[in-house]
Image 1 (tube, rainbow, N blue to C red):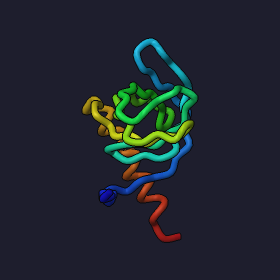
Image 2: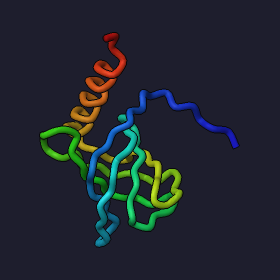
Image 3: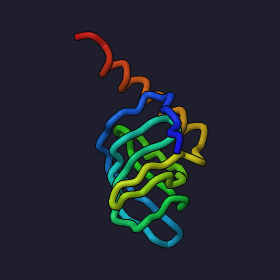
Length: 108
């Protein structure tokens, strides 16, 4: 199996949120983030290929809401690709990652 190299800056974060699949709703904990995907943990039983709605806050602003496709799952952790997000939420996400990278990678 060939692995695709990640071309994006992945940041480690710690954000609480919710994950929804149809009428099932559970809490989740976002652990990794890029503009194209995320890693998270949840008690919701999911499998590769499931589509979920995730809502979480980056900072004190409005929550980000997006649809994800589960790319791998080893309960309670999973990795995913963002398959649907509004332009406004994508801009907030990209700005957050850019600011995080600038402060994390800047010399002291």
